[in-house]
Amino acid sequence: MAINLFTPNFRVDECLEGIRECLEKGWTGLGFKTLEIEKAWCDYTGLPYAHFLSSNTAGLHLALHMFRTEKGWQEGDEVISTPLTFVSTNHAILQTGLTPVFADVDDTLCIDPDDLLAKITPRTRAVMFVGLGGNTGRYQDVLRICRERGLVLILDAAHMAGTRSNGKHVGWDADCTIFSFQAVKNLPTADSGMICFQDAERDARARKLTWLGINKDTYSRSMNQGAYKWMYEVEELGFKYHGNSIMAAVALVSLRYLDRDNAYRRQLATWYEQHLSGDPAIGLIPMTSGCESSRHLFQVRVAQRDQVLMALNEFEIYPGVHYRDNTAYQLYRDSANQCLNAARASDEVLSLPMHMNVTEQDVRFVAEKLKQIVRLHRKA
Ligand SMILES: *Cc1c(COP(=O)(O)O)cnc(C)c1O
Image (cartoon, rainbow, N blue to C red):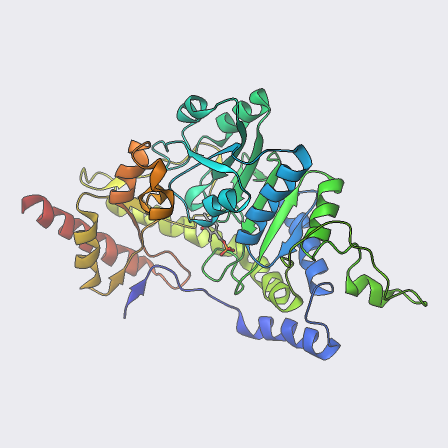
């Protein structure tokens, strides 16, 4: 049987029960289950505010749009980001009329605070930090730099549902944290996400902006009796970025299993490490101390990665690559060749199969094949 990188694991009956509730109630949209998942997410993470979205991508754009308009940032003001991420992170900067400036990554594959310092200019306004694979990297140093320099810190926590740092769920100390509940992420739905601010004002503004700028949602209007339940105000130009109750019903079920699933991912990672450590041709990614990672990914670094990947495919092992250096894409080519570690990682990283159906035996098989293949390629 093929061993794939990701296979979402849905608790089908429980999901259907939640969806059935929405259908029977006749309420599939904003409100009802979306309010439930927001409350459940705050309870789970300890974060003070959470607003359910159609995706993390929408949230990244919304966050930058909100800070830009709130703080009066100008066209061409700069946001420092990582080249080693899904393009959503960096597209959000362009979509807001801001200029991405890339800082290199360190051996954790997250932004290197030393290079971040070197990339700060008088026009730098914000930093996007991506906790790659669920790891915190040198986030604490990045946070300190942002606080010292008055920069807004946005945490793209797409991989970090369930990641804790020194016992506390991540996200509470960034200016804005955005999670992804896309189908292959650790808390799978089909598409949805969560945006978390530290303060009530921004949370309230985010709620308006995800529904076109309308200041009262249909659900709270439907709860309202009286003659003016149709009445609402539109205060500013918004987007259609809010999540819906069907996705929320699935998210509520996935959230129940998040800690259990992440614990199993950490077990898989431990098994991979046991089988792969000590092989000089296979590089492991160091974990930050105090980080209890969601382990969205288990990445290794190998020479001749593309050949290794194809050779693994012959054994029906299908790993992935996270990510291609974004500055290698046409859209970002003006920024190419500035981040040497990211460019090297982009050629070397391989994400090994990581999901609930991977067994200890699978891990042993993948590790053995990987070691064999790497050995053959080294001789060739
Ligand atoms: C998946 C992902 C996103 C986008 O999340 P969606 O919910 O699919 O929009 C953004 N950033 C990173 C690092 C991701 O992995």
